[in-house]
Image (cartoon, rainbow, N blue to C red; front, side):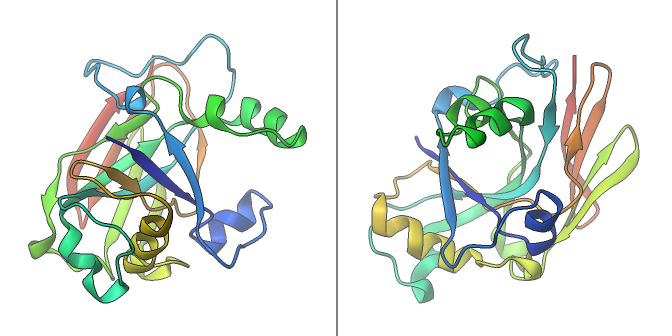
Length: 202
């Protein structure tokens, strides 16, 4: 199982981090060990002092596919959720300054939190509202219509380089409003007002 992640897919988020917008989707990967499996809490690693939340719409691949055309992309997933791409921002900044890959900052254990999966047949993923609350306060408020690279294009682009397999996960990018977490924080993710994700930070 692969975890494929798309960066800089919302213009406002790219701007808040001072990143350039790219013509093609920015791709990075997380190992399967990044999946959050410990349901009591997310523990901040002792090697970072600046972990940030990034809420994203996540799709799960249900068919084997390669070189998928956009018009067929919707046939390759039937459920979705929101997830949190936890990022060690201090480590990421250090690596970027040295021109090095981001894996340590993005792919560490439990850095990929997944919410409850929902059926795509019940929602319009081209115009989907999703939110993140931190300690009850709204911190991210996104809509998929603002994606620079829609889901169909993401599937087309990623499947050029990687064969998509059943169970693969794609994080589709985060909107503006990312920020740090501290011990004691509670994060809740919503899709069209329905809470599908809950995680405590320690």
